[in-house]
Image 1: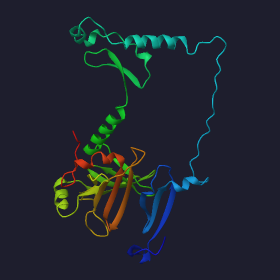
Image 2 (image 1 turned 60 degrees about the vertical axis):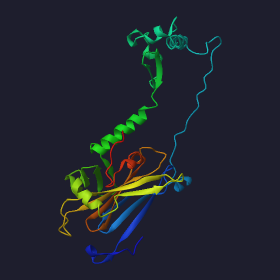
Image 3 (image 1 turned 90 degrees about the horizontal axis):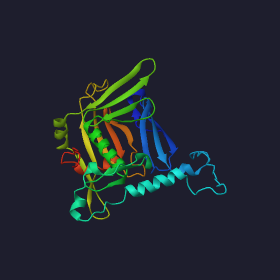
Image 4 (image 1 turned 30 degrees about the vertical axis):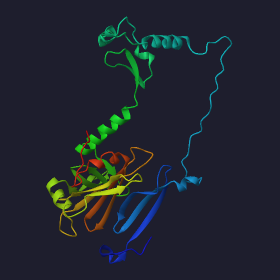
Length: 299
């Protein structure tokens, strides 16, 4: 794609962009990244499921060979040891019966019958709930707890997001900084500070700009769709002799992959950037945004 805005750094030569389409079965035609590979020449990577229909671009799947087992004459339906473990588990999970309700309530946790942990799979562990006998509790809450911990780490700035393709990569640490960097085997890591966080400066910026945007759902409920945060005091720009600054836009993005994150950076004006971060994880905290767009972990 050519005939872009004339580039002052290349004798007013028109800007140009190469658009790369990549097969991704779960994508919804979203932009993965926008990078300036050379001066005023850009590269846009777009994820789309449409390419996956073509045999040259679809994901290659490894063949799965079925295994058929045939029992010998007189063999049990399952291993004898497994049958024994199933019987032990049934005995352990039976509720305690007593002559009175009060005696049942007085069963102490340390008096519960011992449980053979090897009788359970790795996704189920025995637990004692209150005064009841030990029961098997599945790990259905592990992913939820993991998401909560991930959100806490993200909002504390200890978990940073990375993105970008081509020469420059991006690092975003919430409430800390936005970095643009390039790693070289010989010269090491070259870091450019695009913006640093200062809550007072952001609040001043939010009073003059839209820091929180809403979306009206089909059921009539108004939900926060996007929040914008201002990061200033970046490295001084050679072209403007002013510090770089960036507006970070955190957007809720529904996806079949709950931990998918899309990070891209735009430069609408010289050394003034827009960093887009889109993920289903962000959907969980956007409704906690206050009037300045600041997020918090919901209790």
